[in-house]
Length: 108
Image 1: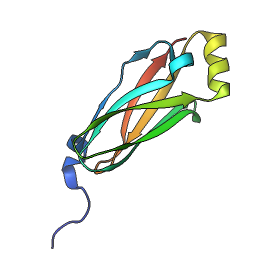
Image 2: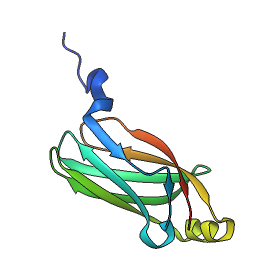
Image 3: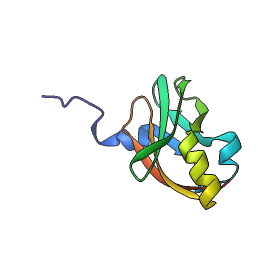
């Protein structure tokens, strides 16, 4: 029998580029570049201490790269202003691949 699903090459089907330190996140949001193997929607969710602090999505065509801007929530903006930085875990889901997770430091 032939296995179903994406198999073992799911990680190579998507390419995610994100800076480890994001400055100007308060004004511009969290910016993630995403290239997917299939057409669909590239979704970005950022969590800090288990709570969602930013989210965004954008349609992507086959083989094209898009920049997804995840807008910060009011609570995240307040925490970023108060503490001067916020460490988040970013999960990127793209069509044709499994989720890609990265850790990012946000600075105002």
